Image (cartoon, rainbow, N blue to C red; front, side):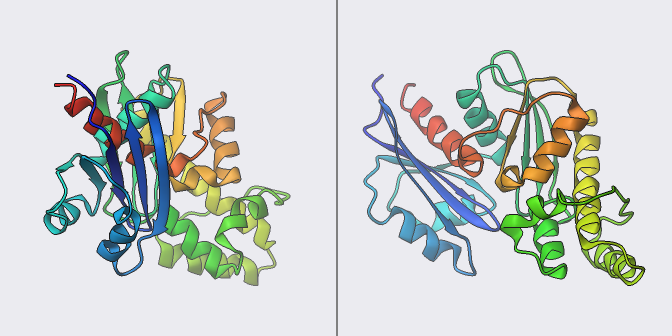
Length: 258
């Protein structure tokens, strides 16, 4: 069976929407927009000038997308499937995928064939996710894009006991009132996220090599602490937030082989 002329994968997340278009020769287009309060309008902007034969949607908004964009040949898959496919394509040697996104954290153990063996997902609370970092960077008045580098300027490591955004903010405020450097507080917040993530990794399995994907993979401090705690380098895609959309597009390509 021949490939479809063009297949799009779209990942509709809580903070951003990513689009990847594939044909038989590989990726031909990719784009990203903030989700905002009009995710369907943002999806329309991404795909309105893209000519494809099939669209595969993943992420929180996948079912909404399928219902709204009836003019497309739409299939939906879970984020777990999408990230496993995307990570395995980019790094065939990978055995564990870690994705820390805006509102959830996913850990996926891969088989030797790149299939999902076991997974765990935290999507009930923003604790330990990009939303937590965003909230706390705002609290410390540091731009989110530079929050990781800011934390790396710390001169000691302190412990933040709460992962609830409200209580963590209160704890950070108390630490600052006692004269703690804000850079040290930022480091403590990053350490708390990594500790929570490592607990998930232990439950799923600590099998290297590890792929780190999702928006928080851009955060240099989280990356460094993870590598330190795992005692090995991470495999990080050039565009870590595009892995889900890539996996969705790959799924659509595979459908057309059947």
